[in-house]
Every structure is written in C-alpha cells, then in structure tokens.
Length: 170
View 1 (cartoon, rainbow, N blue to C red):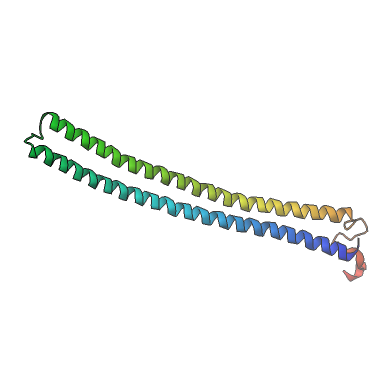
View 2: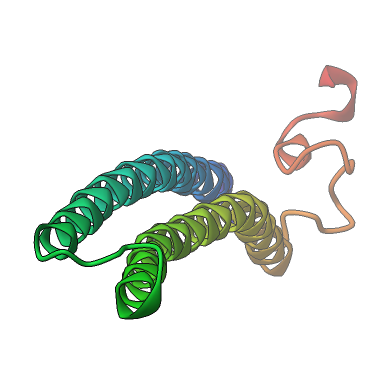
C-alpha cells in the first residue's frame, strides 16, 4: 500500500468520523430547539386554558344572572323550590364546563411537555450515536489500513508512514 493510498484512507476515515460527530451535533441542536419550541407551546397552552376558563366563567355568571332575572321577573322565589334547584344545577353545569376547558388545556400542556422531553432525549441520543458512528468509522479505517499492511511488522509502529523513512530519520 503506497503512502498516497494510506494517506487517503486516513483522511477518509478522519472525515467520516468528524462528519458523524458533526451530524450528531446538528441533530442534537435541532432536537434541543424543538424541545424549546414545545416548552413554549406548553406554556402558551396553559395561558390560553386559563384565559378560556376565565372567559367561560364570565359567560356562566352572565347566564346565571339572566336566569335569575327571568325567574324574579315572573315572581319566582330564587331561594326555594324549583327556582333554587334550577339555579344550583345551572351553576354546577357551568362550573363543569369551565373545568373541562381547564382540563383540556392541561392535557394539551402535558402532551407538549412530553414532546419537549422526547426531543431532549433525541438530542442526547443524537450526540451519543454520533460518537458510536465516529468510532465505527475509525475502526473500519484502522481495519482497512491493517489489511493493507500499514501496520505490518516492518513498520516502526510509530505511524503508517514510518516504514517509508529510515529509522534514524525519525
């Protein structure tokens, strides 16, 4: 194996290893960015849920007030009987609706937080796997050099290039 072939194998191996690590870093950075976006969306979902629940409760209060006004205008007693029962049932139903809004927002927030965690795991895995790919490239390159005799017993063991120089030159 000539120096040029040995050198090309070394360069190819190094480029493959560096490329694998660079690719892993890029994938990791992308996943971290996606995690950050998911966290922001989760916070936004929480805020929107609070706002929607607050608006639902305002609507509920207006509906309850309207119902009380109608019953009172017809001479009904709001503190007893059917009028009290209807008012209580309406208030309970309205609060249930507001809590459903909050629950839906919390579910969305949780899903987005889970997505953020998944992206952080992808970032960690991208970094780890890039080192494994780089190591594999280095091992393959070393194997190719060994098969070609670059590490043969005639070498000084210092470098694949050492066999081409007199011992006193090193």
